Image (cartoon, rainbow, N blue to C red; front, top):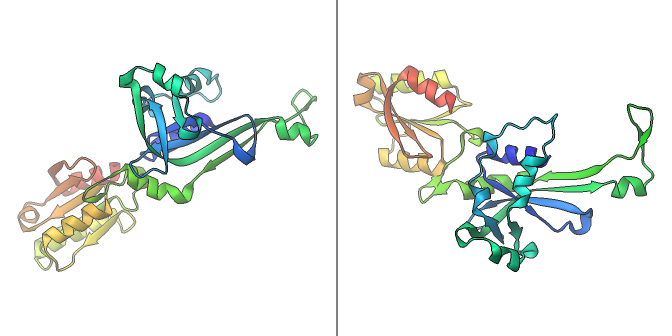
Length: 261
């Protein structure tokens, strides 16, 4: 569950750091909060840079094998909330490894072992016919706060930068000259191919700058920009919101790129 949580957040585009936490009223002897770094975070956190540089998706865990080594990496490097912070252990880290920042909690897991099941006299029959006291845990993801956390972790001064995996729409199609026949035709062809569940079509009679600003603000991963010059050549200008990179491509290439993320 520890690794599954790490990988779930990573696939959403979040760098979540597991931090040893106080079990509080839920109880048990071990729990971890999963925290992303953000300037507007509700708490101060202290973390080794080694954890921030680790790519959890580059590791493909075999859930039928021993996962100890992977979990040990994440739990052997320093990571603590303000409540669990150990100043002596922190001072022992090399200065270039220390990262002190604000954090937002997006998940929390608890390991209970047999603390509650044994106390309740709960047992099940194992495959060998013997009674086994089940080990228990509690697992939670802050679904309602994930949207805010995603925005805090992925934005700039212009607006949101939605990661592909969680973007409400993959693209905004920006018609720079509504009413121009070839421009309208190419925009509508792209919109029809992508579908309204993947794209938003902006054919408002407003200035191009306003369309650009609104698309940046709402954070579509792709902006498909089409004006009379490009439409005459059957070309679409694609802007990648996350990086700001722009490229002029054919209609088919635009569809492939947008659908491929």
